[in-house]
Length: 435
Image (tube, rainbow, N blue to C red; front, side, top):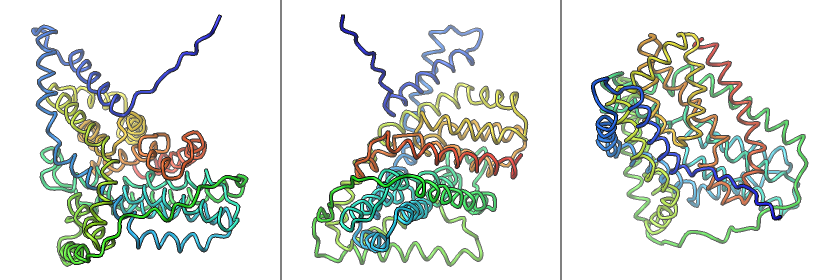
């Protein structure tokens, strides 16, 4: 008798967005239905809340698309490619290849997550091509996995969705918490200290892994000849230069007004200008943008459903119910750690920092206000939970896997180590600063 193995298929991120929508509607009906209203009637009312909220985050959705696309476009420009070639030319050992890839990727990811994601993948591939050409022994899966580390520092950096969103006038939680400038989140002592410790801890881990793991015999084929189409016009340089100058003009207000001008819109404006300057040609820039847009499909499809979930949470009273539950099961000392762990768990199902902030942000804000905890600190706590479990989340790894050619299994063996060390740093740091 022939045995048939049961194949379990994990839902796609879009499928999970649909599942979370259904769960939020079910939970709202279960926990918030008035005693004098029938199940069918109230279910229909909750579906109305979902529909009303569905288009509520369109501006935020476009901001998330642009921050990924503009970062990607900048990463594939010729000046960046040439800089990566110079980096790989100096590599003589596995340790150097691994630590340079990880270090550069984290630096790039701190600047912009889309930029860091593609930079890490491209640099890792160039390391593999260099190893094959020059006969330098490296552990290519480890090098490629190190190219994903930008996704473990991004949310505490200059493209962090949650801290940048709350720094923006008119954001969807402004009535509850006001506008929180980046000097209280991204540039706070709490965040800068934890990020510095995290980077040092990860670099130490990379050094140990590079020393311990054996080199691999297979490397990728050189694809350096596959470039974007040539463009002779220089109009992109002039337009981009003008945009960069306009962005730089805001720096003149720092002494008087601080860093409050930094927001998602400002970062996107700056990335647009830098991308145009680096590509020089409008033709090349448009071609690079077309390629980058393919990676934004998930954001476009999923964010309206996250907005619908937010509509259910806020309009049904489910948000207050969940916040009250957190207040009951935790204290001001334990809530930050509980929020960190729950953020990490939710990221496995909502693989987008912006989408997660839309869904979980209101809950954390409500609970933090109830307990008298700093909202700015809790914004960063949620950001840490979101970014650290990216090391277990395959959604954003797809571009890296495609560019480097390694398998998810090869990558996961190393990223689990990154996750464990990163979680340790954040748990100890949150306990010491906020516990």
